[in-house]
Length: 98
Image (cartoon, rainbow, N blue to C red; front, side, top):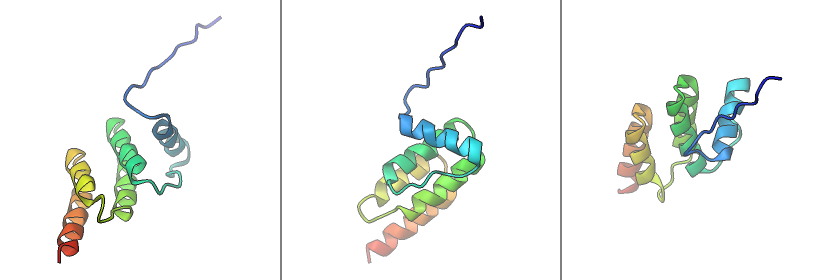
């Protein structure tokens, strides 16, 4: 009998891991309208070096930017080296301040 092995993935919510697995098997992101979870999915994509998922999450997060979360989304973009998201958030913030 082959022994069972358990792989522990720390610092990740179950919903985010499910989204990663969904992407790996379908090449699609699950439907998402929560900016926080979308940001965590972006972080997971970077962590696992899933370039296409990262790009798709970056696009998703840009659609979820609001006046209330624009600064935190800009910080997320800096932390995960998302050039397009940085530009989008910077423009969004500058337009919101007018």
